[in-house]
Image 1 (cartoon, rainbow, N blue to C red):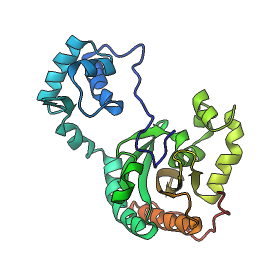
Image 2: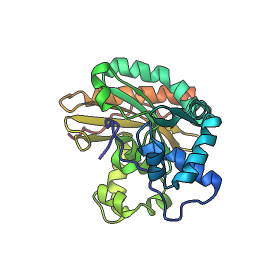
Image 3: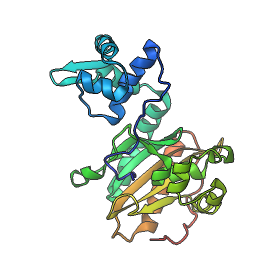
Length: 273
């Protein structure tokens, strides 16, 4: 299981039985193979992980390298600089990350924990930023990494604020991970998260560590656009101060995004765990 504290996300791209047969589809499969594979792959491994036949993989890899989408090294193929450059231009994540970073840096200084910024993306939680010290590098989720919503404190927030139609489509694996058989059994859990405006997990993902996450609101549409979280040793007992610091940071981010955040003066419920 993974969380904000996990360095090895469990999210894996699986090749669909009806994988796309178009050139563009196969090119996407080659690039997507790097999501769950090593950063450098030889042609044989790239073909195996992507599901693209070796001859096609070779031809497409050469073309992608020529476009800067892949880079060829003596050890194999890597994602190219052009992918990085284009990724930085995706409007919402790029804007949110730039706006949130000052507040996240202040939060890191204040709480001395691993700080993450995440956004919902489909059924997953995608990490846009992380701040930690040298002694905490083993706890970092990679920027750009995806993990299922049900496996993270941030993802639980996204689920708690999701509409009923979305929740009714949760798969068996997600329901089992959340400890229920039917989505309506989640009303109590998600209602409590909405009432107190934070979620948490305590050593359920990484032994010895716990994570608290709060939402960043767009109150115009009353939607949660992101979350910020703090991962810290489970022995710490300053949860109330952590929650208040998270609320304040989320409020600043919302203001900077021109999204007025809810007032932060509401006292959280007693912290469990």
